[in-house]
Length: 74
Image 1 (cartoon, rainbow, N blue to C red):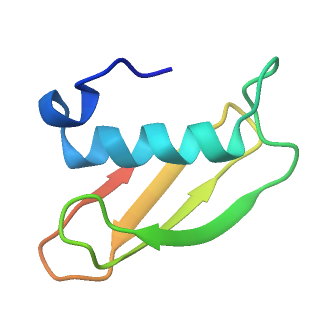
Image 2 (spheres, one colour; image 1 turned 180 degrees about the vertical axis):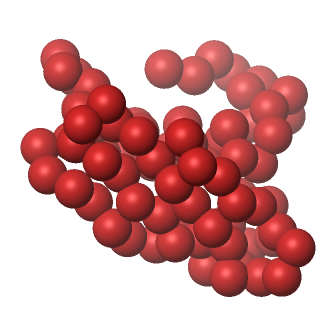
């Protein structure tokens, strides 16, 4: 899914999305079997990153608990 050096060249949001999809969207369908709501260590500041993954289209949303850090809606 990712090549060596991906972390050095990509944004914190892209790294978080790649890690989330790798963990929750297994092959061959690349979609989760059910809606996922979880948290992980933020790829930018190390804080708490809360995220969701939808089983329809594998859409992700995420927001770090630290003020001014990463947030996205896919």
